[in-house]
Length: 191
Image 1 (cartoon, rainbow, N blue to C red):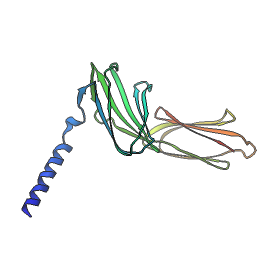
Image 2: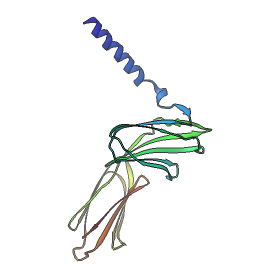
Image 3: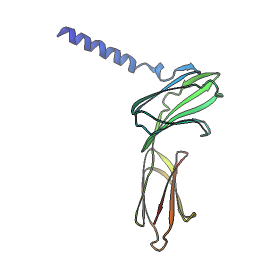
Image 4: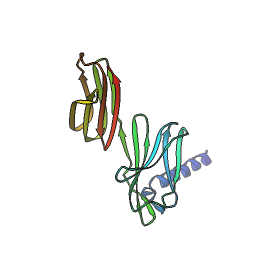
């Protein structure tokens, strides 16, 4: 019994030691190879590396399910800020890093999770919902046969719930674009 308690105590001490090590969050490493880990990934999700202007430098489709560990060669990147993004079904997970003089620093506290908007239509109704952790600017644009019929900017919303009624006489092709966090999401349908 004492042996079991001692083993459990040692395991807990080891766990707390790793959990409280702040250096793991702001590590500077050799820029040739960088290890990035994402949990709960699903086969088919999109993994990208972007620069600070949002230009995509690398993209690949995830081929495994569970934990994803990737090593990236960043030796050819210029000094600047970069993101590694995992695009899941309903969320986007973003990890930020900085390259300076061929060294990479993961930026402490910069990991972000953004919920994608949910856009659907039911006959002549367009339903849009979006959850956000922070108040953010959201733009909604609805097109009918490639012509803008509604453009709305919603400010300071953490929870967006909107229903738009389409004119029953206007049958044709519709497209809804919701933009937030420098990203756009769209849904096209016929009514």
